[in-house]
Image 1: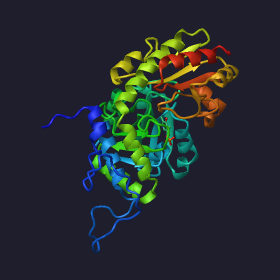
Image 2: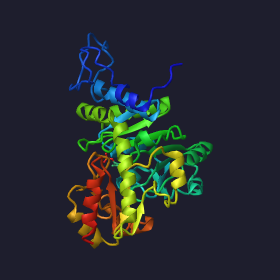
Image 3: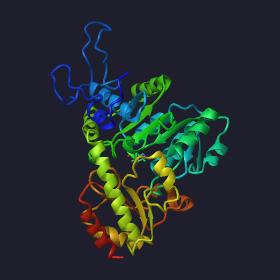
Image 4: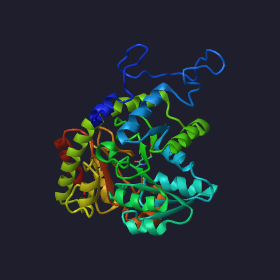
Length: 383
Ligand SMILES: *Cc1c(COP(=O)(O)O)cnc(C)c1O
């Protein structure tokens, strides 16, 4: 058997083969809503663009290969992908979710999907026993985000997958924070992987998108049916942006990781910073697990400034780091979880999982790291 190609080679070539029609080296954007049929029922495999589009097909092949899945299905946003995954469930089914996940996830679960008879339980999935205890007769899915947003807590994917397998539950992992370059949940036993492609996979902060990567034919069939029936698919142009972005995923992630480690060390030494949350720091409570299940620590860092006032004083001063929601772009993005990504949780909800008003989350970009040090230093001086 032919040896599996390396990650960077796959990101550049899988699904990204030259166009058979013209030889175009770059996958074309097929801007079409429909396809000609030679006679009734005779076509080239494409009938209508909600069902399938060649640009989308190429991206789906690429992302399936990068995550080591059997197929992947792209949607209009990360939330649309998560929503599509949930519509594989039926009324009466139960889903276990990490208690500290992307803020939009509990909003979707509790304010929309719970109206359709789906049941949700939030547990601290960093504690393996909590997952085991939360499984009920109607539990179908365990949904885990690792590292979590913004507390950078890890869940042991391999250990949770063993419990899930034993109890007939599928494990879904949101791998957005690390990308398949640094973490491969399917290799560790996950049944499906989710990404907001908006983040590292696209990497240039210029388009929304989401993907569900799966491992079984029946999942693929259901997801393709959901794409066709519910229609929240990714447009050919956005697919093309991700195809382009993903070609440089390896080099971007390497630089994100180098800068991430350096900025975490810088913040950790800084007098004005009270605490740093980054799995690459030896004093992170799950540093060993990070080294075990991740091949890099990435560039997501959260740190404590002490108060909302301090956070604001600092954020107003920044000139290189961009204040805004989102993450995973080449530019350093900095955000305030309590008022931005996790505002929907409410004060009580945030307190319950340990998100404070003084927390600042940084998605370290790939700029010259000295410029980031200087910018953060002058920002922190305002505290
Ligand atoms: C951004 C994000 C999402 C949601 O993705 P959108 O593309 O914004 O809809 C889900 N999970 C994580 C971890 C995210 O960072």
